[in-house]
Structure formats: structure tokens, C-alpha cells
Image (cartoon, rainbow, N blue to C red; front, side):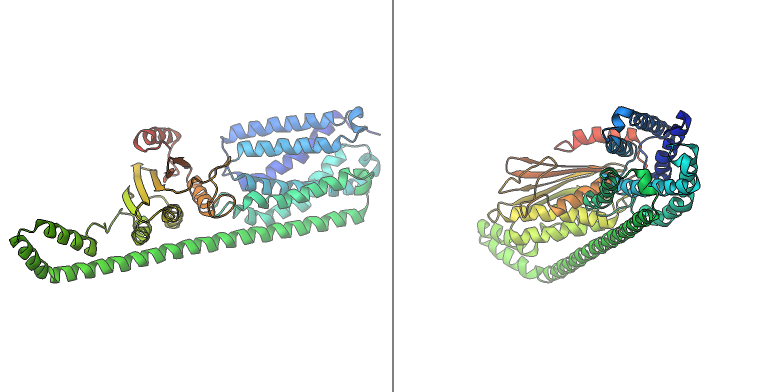
Length: 466
């Protein structure tokens, strides 16, 4: 028997769906795509649509065919779609937060119904009476709010933070699986939700499942943070190693210069003898040999930024050892709004891939070219081009690795770094060349107009167009 009014029905569904949005706000408030006014309006429309869909599910013809599960799925998809549209964050992270709060909210609804049955059994069986809304609010205050306070630190530690985000493509499946478990538990049995909620043992069972799930989510986030910390330390160590190598290389060059200065009088004597004999070919050969041995053509400094210079110089040494031509026209100032570790990892991954591809070519035919720099204040654009022996396979998301199945780890890491700086990265091939083009904003406060101007300037100054 259903004796609830339309107002009671609307209030209950608004409280149930609105609580998820309100509780998700602390984790997502800094990630909105639109202004707060526009976002609030979109969520108001979502609430209105949510209530309308729930009302459709109350039609007798739909209730007789077990349409409730489909109504729940449609509402879930609608809420997920709204979050993805309004929140600027990794899809995996958004889904992880959503399914965590949604399944927790479902338990709150079940627990609230249990309280309502114990409080006023007659009204509980009448459907969405005012007692249903009161008990839901009570359950939110007693269980949901304290739980959100506990998990707030975990979620805030990963939302909008830098790090390796590739794992979030799969981690959201864990709370997603709990959501499917919840959906199957309530809509696949012959027992109604009211009958299920009336038994205290069932409430304790679902509570244990939710508590275990929250503990698992906590451990996942801790492991993600530890992984990102280790990756960051690894990047720092990698950068320091290359700077040490560059320092040793510079020290060696300085020692060679001192030795050359000391031996200069001997070389001058040889040159005078060759010149006196007018053996011009021997004179040119001697000068070329001296230039190669003393590495006079090798630049010591490629750019002002010490981190980028260390990485570029490190791979220049590798290029020389493997006989790959190495050409650099790159300008990056020492002070730039990019983390040193990100610079090290970004350039390191791209140049490592380029040299590995060039190493597969016959000695002397490989080539790596680095061109670009700061277009204007706050905008960095550059490209790395290298010769290839085999064109890598391409899927819908980019080029696959030539070393293993799927996309390359280094490529995905570079993509993550560029996207963190609101930039773009493009991979393409042209003949027997592979090119990586990158544009990134080193100033997070860069206005949309400045970004538009920067993109126009990039399209005319950097080839290929980024």
C-alpha cells in the first residue's frame, strides 16, 4: 500500500541523490570546468531529471516487470556523465570517488530503511513517507558524514595531485565491482528491499562489506601515493645521475683543454712544418683530426636550464657512442614553471626512445634532432625527431611500443606530464622519421586568451603544427 504524497517522493529522492553530490564536493571543489553558478545550475537540472526518472519507475506497468534495477542504472549513468562533464579530473579518479560514495550512499539508504521500520513499521511499508527522508538524514549525520571525514584526507591526497595517473584507468574497477555486487544483491532476489532491510543480520552483513571496501580503498590510495613517491625519487635520482655524468664530462673537457693548451706549441710546430712543405691536404687532415680528438665541435652548453641541459648532454654522449647524429636547437631558461623532476622524466623518456630507435639503423645513419624553446612567457613548445627503421603500429590512442605489446610506458609517462601542464603532445611519422611535438603551459594562471594566442603562434613557428 502506497500512501506517500508527491512532495514526500520528491524530497526523499532529492535528499538521496543530493547527499552524494554534497559529499563529493569537498574532494572536487577545486576541479570544476565551469563557474560555481553554472555548476550549481547543472546539478539542479540533474536533480530534476533524477526525480522524473524515479517517478517513471513508480508506474505500475514498470514495477511489475522488475524495472527498478534499470532505473537505478540509468540514474547512475546520468550522475556519472554529469560528473565527467563538470569536473576537470582524470576519469579513473572521478569514477573511483563516485562509486565509493555511491555504494556508501546505498548502504545509508538501506540502514535508514531499517531504522524507519523499527521506528514506524506501518509508514515504512507505505513507501516514500516523510519518515523515510528523516531517517535518511539521520543516517547521513550518524554514519555518512563521519565516514567522509575519515576518507577526506585520502581522497584529497590524490585529487588534482601530480604523479603517475595511468593506474587510475583500472583502479576504479574495484569500487565499480562493489557497486555491481550491491546492484545484484538487491535486484536479483525475490526478497524486496523492505524485507531485506527489516533484518538486522542483513544490515550487519552489508556493513561489514562496506567497511572492508573502505579499508581496501584506503590501502589502494596509500599504495598509489607510495608508488608516486618512489617514482618521484627515482626521477630525482635519475636527474642527479645525469648531472653527475655531465659534470664529469665537463671536467674531462676542461682537462683536455688544459692539455691542448700545454701541447699547443707542439701542434704549432707540426702545422708550420706541413705549411712549409705546402702539403695542404695533410694540413686539413691534421686540423680535422685535432678537432675530432679534442671534440671541439661538441657544444658544452645546450640551454640555460641545468636540468634539461644535463639530460640533453647525457644523451648526446650516448648518441656519439652509437654513431647517431645529434642536432640541438633548443632554448630553455633556468627559471621556468616546470618541476625539475618533470623536465628530467619528460626529456629523458623522449630522448631515450629516439636514441633506441636510431640505434637500430646502420651506424652513421641514425639522427636525433631537438628544436624549440619558449614561444613566449609561460609557453614551451619543442619537437624531437628521429630516424626509424620500422614504423610503429598505431591504435586509436597513439603509437604502440616496438619493444612490447601495447603502448610504451615512457610515452604514456610523457603524456601524463604534458597533460598536467594543460599541454598537448602529438606523435606522428613522415617517411622514415618519427616526430614528437609538445606544447605545454609553464604558467598555470595563463588566461584562455593567452593560450589561444600561444597556439596560433605555435602553428606558425613550430613545424609540424602542434
